[in-house]
Length: 415
Ligand code: NIG
Ligand code: FE
Image: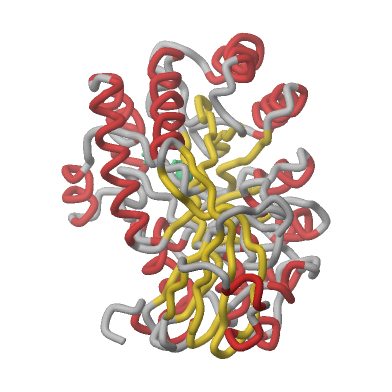
């Protein structure tokens, strides 16, 4: 309360899920009892003004409505959910390719007819098709597209978004994407955004993988750091894209500059990418549809979060990632959308979480953590986001149901 002048009270949540019990636990395997919902719960959070907008600051208190300390009730900024909705930590989407132009519905039509993702990429479609579209639009048009998406995503309850570049490949377009992300961040100060540079999404036409990684490491990353364009760096390690030696080189260059490192790993084939992610202390290894036993063991002995993307397996018609095996081995698991124009055109994180609930054999504590606390960890924010406890940033989501499971079941859409 020290120094806090304005605050708000949100009370009467049918159930409040704080994630408090999961905060102190290592690994990713949680018990149902770790959910520990508080009946008739409340949160108190500070308010701050950013560019004229009054937005939540940090959590000052959370607990039962009837135990709210008296000093916090001395405010008119109180809202009562009347036990008709629940509160969970703000949903976090730790893997999106939010800022791109164009769509690839033509490829979707072809894939419905049986053409594969790989075949389309080999014919100059896939990532390269979105690169052409993203290069062709102006920065203000790209911003307009991204802003509209964020507005819709926020209405789904998402409060934190990781966004990658990677549909420019050349320096100018990649920087255009990153500047759009910065503007998005300034436009929506009430949410948390993580900016990732993914020049190593594909080899730019006319270049080679070796030459491009070299240029990124020696010329582009230092400039990104100097201009504060990105927090982290990502690379697509897979057959036909980049290999683990490129990943190691990129990780070293990124980390030397104080940038975080993450990887698209073992998605289309197994190239030992999960092992490379673990060895290079990546914040997260994402996809993992084709991860091996050795890859699972490597992640289990590392700080790397496994970020699983069930929407992508679904859209690619591929078997799901081995979520249960990862959790049982002690790996921390996050679930994200992978929103992109090719392999997952959906940014509906609640729906994607429901896909995980159906396919992954995770319990509800593990599922809630995967889109809050563990997603925060995948973004390098494990001590700041993902829980409704004092000192954490006040990102919260109201869910239209009487329990988290009740919401997961209907996504609050008919409850
Ligand atoms: O995460 N795997 C690489 N990148 C995206 C797909 C990119 C695209 O098809 O445009 C993914 O699945
Ligand atoms: Fe992706």
